Image (cartoon, rainbow, N blue to C red; front, side, top):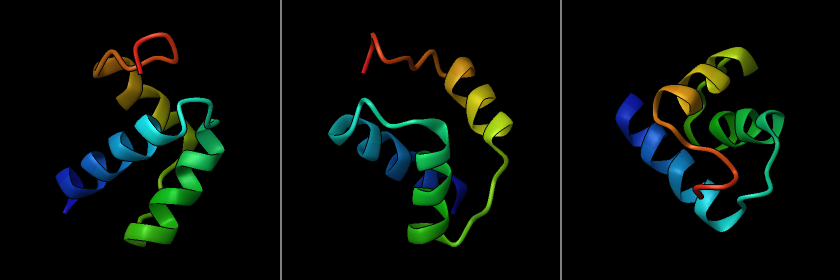
Length: 55
């Protein structure tokens, strides 16, 4: 399920590369019913080397 959420978040970022991390948090909750802290989203984006410049 987590990998599905990550894939969904990646698709979300491809369609909305300007999204803020709190919007990513809300997306994960709305679509996957997973509530994660913004700092967790930040760490995942850093680990996966996803930035606004690379999306």
